[in-house]
Image (cartoon, rainbow, N blue to C red; front, side, top):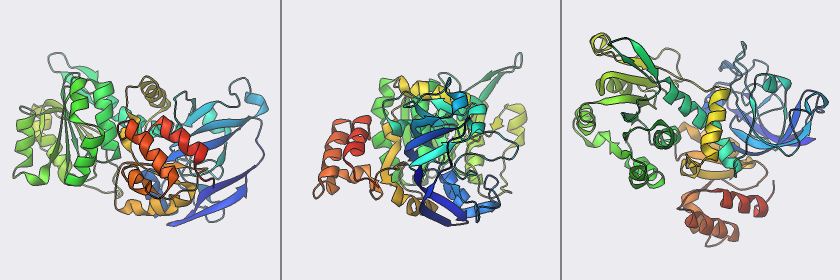
Length: 417
């Protein structure tokens, strides 16, 4: 089976190539990759090459396929595992195998990754419980499972303590107040969706320094939608206020129970502690690109106010399964997280452009040949292109969000790579 894939040969050296996959082994699975959501973690791996802890040292000779947020369907099942997997079954891959080597799909393997038309899933993925059945109505939502699963793990990572008996309760505080600092990007929007559909908090405040990003986020996940589900949602540009800490304390009536830090900026970490109420919990969710990032917090508050600090990175198969269930039950509006669509030929340039973040999630349809296209630009592009005109009309009927109906039309009518 031949595949087309974007492979990494070294730092900043990505190549779209066609090559032959090995024959499917007795304990392996051949899949057709339909979608892969681009992730900033891939940009970090591309930028660092073999200096990245997940990327092998010999990629110049054995290039790896990039992309780890994939969704697809099974084409062939090895003889020894036919009782467990079926041809035609839709699947997602949980890329965090938790191996001693640190190697994971999308970072470390020659024949499995999301930026490919076809991929060969090695036995270790099944052995670790990381090939997971998926029954959602769209492939793109399946590609968002990994990133949403990471945010879900972040919610699970929060904790609170009853200091009368030191009993600890895991998870964001039910009915509590949540701040998402630097949260107008894709992971922040995912956190808003999960705050409403999963965590059951009463208030969410999202901060950013860009009115444009905040306006986009507010148009996709609206305060009106949140209010319908019993949550007060506010978007705030903290650069527009003289004292951001005071403004955040005021809007939360004294402070937040839980705080996500979505950008690896030490000052935001300090702010997070300052806006916590007693027994508040800070999740430094953002992954720094440097290995020695120092931050500060008031240790007096850690001791006397019981401020907790955690950090969650990635997710586990349990989170993937839980996220799939939330998506299948309609608890998360996955279309709100998608800002762009693209084909496989546009992956490399789109990854490099992540040096300057823009939009939310960019979903690649690996078998389709289209450039990077913003969902909000479909109507304008449709003035001269029938494909985009039809997609624009479908998206408009679905509240301006990318959706299963639009995906189906694209897969049936889009130009093939």
